[in-house]
Amino acid sequence: MAIARNHWYVAAYGEEIGEGLLARTICGEPIVFYRTAAGVPVALADRCVHRRFPLSESNRDGDRIVCGYHGFTYDPDGTCVAVPGQTRVPRTARVPSYTVVEQDSLVWIWIGDADAVADPAAIPRAPWLAADGWVTVRGMEPLAARYELLIDNLLDLSHETYLHAGYIGTPEVAQTPITTEVDEEAGVVHVSRRMKDVECPSFYSDSTGIRGRIDRWQDIEYQPPCLYLLHSRIAPTGIEPGPDGDDPAACHAEIVYAITPETETSTHDFWMVARDFALDDEGVSEFLAESNRTVVLQDVRALDILEKVIAAEPEGYQELSVNIDTGGLAARRLLKKMAP
Picture 1 (cartoon, rainbow, N blue to C red):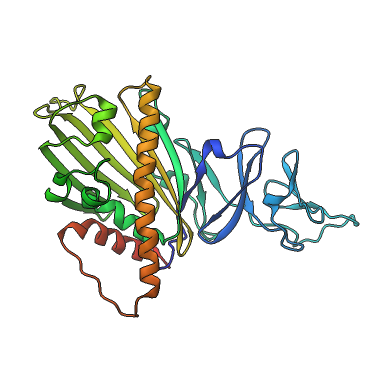
Picture 2 (cartoon, rainbow, N blue to C red; picture 1 turned 90 degrees about the vertical axis):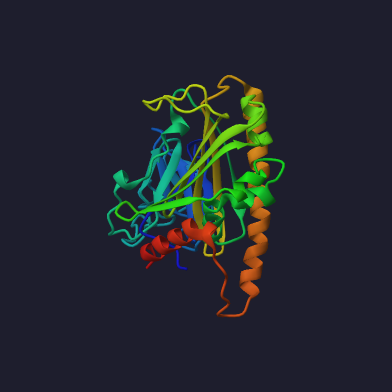
């Protein structure tokens, strides 16, 4: 499936972009990121117009980049303002610039056509990542597989029982049926799994302090192409939310993934875990960061293997889908509509 291009993608965490020059390939396009002295993030094509030298391997002069090979100098909008050995700058001497927006601690980039409408209001929200009353741990792992495989993986959490046993998976995850709804107008896939009186995996028992059986909710909200939200509720069995939605006896975790294609067969796997419990406990933060990275790396290993299998299989191979795949199949359909 082709990459959906006229859309917003997460390019980086806000703290990744600073005075230095950050190189990152997004949807097949090499891009260099940095911040101006005023703190504004900048994204330019990572290739000097002269001899293609990467601007990310170059130098800054104030808010400008000076190519490290021959000294062509670029403003933050990509305009070349100086050429060595001559006063006249060729009219075509500029590199493409990209619209970027910083929101919810994430830096989003519009990777699509320059003449398409890059509407910041269309960027999906993940407000817990930068909200009072929440603490977030995060990371990013390179995935040597197409981004659709990660979407499939995250929309079918039954794999937790098998791939992530001992961390976040328990037998009940695979045993519990799901409900799937698609908001066609908004283009959002919802997949829910509500589990009552089930085993508490170590990921939650060791972070929340809840012992014994729990009621566990997994409510997925996938906003194609990039943002995946897993609203997770963990409470002692029998504890229900109040009539007004108040839920102080439960613990809540917002598991966020930004699924950004690097190329057609590689992906930036941004992962975040925001929580509303044990806010001042650095040990809990370290535990969740280490445990979630372990879970992510288990996915990465499985999907890297799967990418090699797909690349080697004969043309026309037909896979089998079952009830647990309804969310992933809905996501595929929406992505196909988005792609050119």
